[in-house]
Length: 181
Image (cartoon, rainbow, N blue to C red; front, side):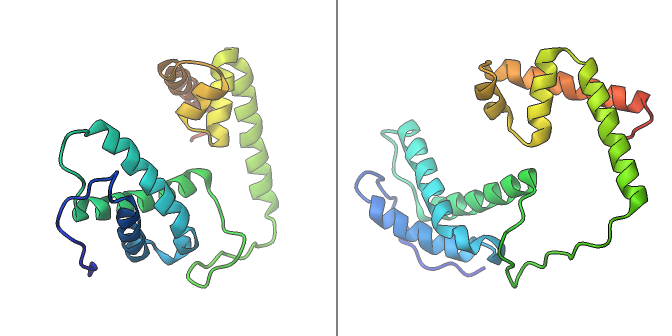
């Protein structure tokens, strides 16, 4: 990967915010894959927020360097890809770089098996304690532990424990029913 020349002097965030943003835009355009290139501006905004937060933590130290800006851009892209994978998002507009497989005819056997697994999951969830059931249900829908903590008005460690133990209970119950996760 060829990088555009960025100054090697450290940036002071408070004084050079616009210059940093310009360099982040350049870096983001280089590291952003075609499947999420249309969201490059949003990723730059997220990267700027991360930089502002990290700048508060390193007060009094030298500013950020060019290599750090590249790393921030790269991690912002990786975070977005992981977020999409977690949420299983599919773009609404077909991108020429990303081929979406065409839907095939519904397979009755597959539908029956899926319905059976769904029923088994529902039965197992109903056997759980209410607090674990709510946390696991939110987790299965795609919420992260911090989101679950906020939604259920719990501490982050408590939410993490409820999800962890609830998922262990769910796996144990499903294996008892002959459903392998």
